[in-house]
Amino acid sequence: MNKAPKEYMVCVQCLTYNQSVSIEKAMDSFCMQKTDFPFVCVIIDDASTDGEPAVLQAYLKKNFDLDDRALARHEETQDYILLFAQHKTNTNCFFGVLLLKYNHFKIRKDKVAYYSPWTTSRYMAFCEGDDYWTDTTKLQIQADALNSHPECSLCGTGFVKRFSDGSPDEDKTIYGNDSNVRIYDIYQWDRLNIVHTLTLMCRTEGFLNYVGKISKYKYSKDTYLFYHLFKNGKCVYIPQPTGVYNVNNLGIWSSMTHEQQIESAFYSYRELYLMNGRDSVIYMHYFPYLLKYVGCKTRHFSDFKLLKEGLRETRDSRDRKSFIKTYIAYRRENGAWGVINRLRVRLAIGSRLKRIVGRGNNR
Image (tube, rainbow, N blue to C red; front, side, top):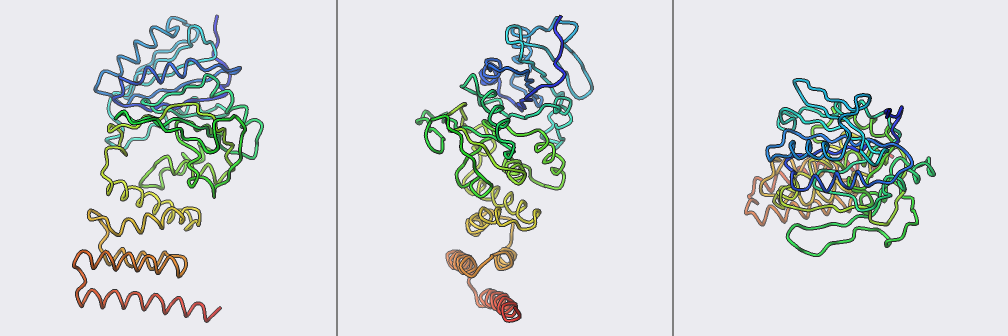
């Protein structure tokens, strides 16, 4: 008789919606993992309308032992249907599939509570329903790397970026395809594009610490998770590719216009920056998007509000000059450089510079 393990080494989180075409490939890549420890894959379907729930149920029926009365579970509440079982041949692999009865994203309802029963695991890994892993040892090598590097809070690997329009694949690795690990800190995080959700594994306590902070944010993206994980430790990076990241027009980011992407990135980095003590690490990302945001014709900030923010938040004279130059060029280009507006800008700039000089003289 099979027994559920007392503790899973890794809990894999897979969030999916209307990905009936690709979800089987993702699940195959989970089931092929060769490990010396048990792991559980928690797949949450957010009330898909393309037949994906049926695909998930058929996959479990074919590949998992749903008849094991001692282990398999079938629960139903007003919010979801849960199916839990062990793989028929890979006995280290367990699936917990939650079929949500209504779309949680539309009403901004959190899904954290649904996979919390499995977050007693040592590590968390992630893969969305339209991506998949290609290395059968992905979970094993990442868990081994984190076991060997207690100073690290997360682990990333290389991956392949694949475009749905048929354009060539792009191998997203840092220094080649070898298996030699590197250690990176928070200052190298986004600049080197080290971590992607597809290849992320992190310590569960770090993930839960981030989850406890989600409520303070209006926006919540993968960048927020990476930032908080890096604040807790370093990243052990394995260059060899272990998965495929599919880029298509069905994703939220890919379906945005260029200006919408700039707006979204600006609002996210701005929130992270302001909500975390104006951290200099986030400023390195916030400031470039502030400059880009100046020229967005669809932005919600008024010209004067944006001017005040730029003068208030720029950290040195070089950045301040760069912002003022960008702002003035935008105003002139859009024919909004009347006498009154010019006067308001000069007054604001002059007032700001006087305060800066005054602070300098008082030091």
